[in-house]
Length: 174
Image (cartoon, rainbow, N blue to C red; front, top):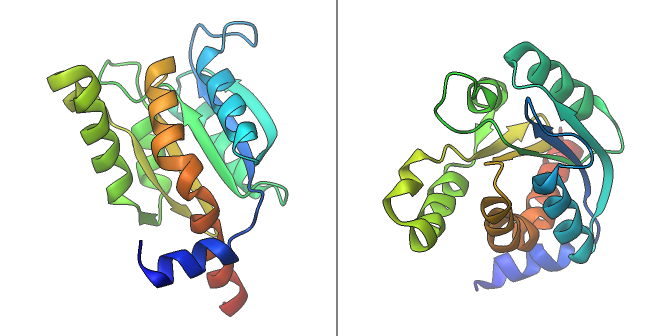
């Protein structure tokens, strides 16, 4: 790890305040296993889950909930699960991609690479995406527990505080 990455990680906030948004036509608070995994792993990494919601896989509803969550002063990042596939009902990617101001291309690329190691060529169906909206991070993961675990453990938990540090630094200069 480079010296500057190490310095940035040391300057990063210890706790990131995260909202979890599950996109699903069928999940309920009792059956939201993807959201459970995000919450469990993020809390385990020392972060705070400040909101947890479920929204139907309808573009207008997803956008409205994302805008509301991103407007909250107690939210640093939103992690979505579900709606990233290629069926007609899967609209999370389109909504998030249009909202993102600075795309973190490496997130989707690395997610698919790691996913390929686990599930093979089916990884090409993943449309995991992340980027910034203003001074907040939005990261969209598929809805399966395994995909959520992979994305949170390998990508988000290790790096989310660094991303938030960079976004806050930008805010302070702006």
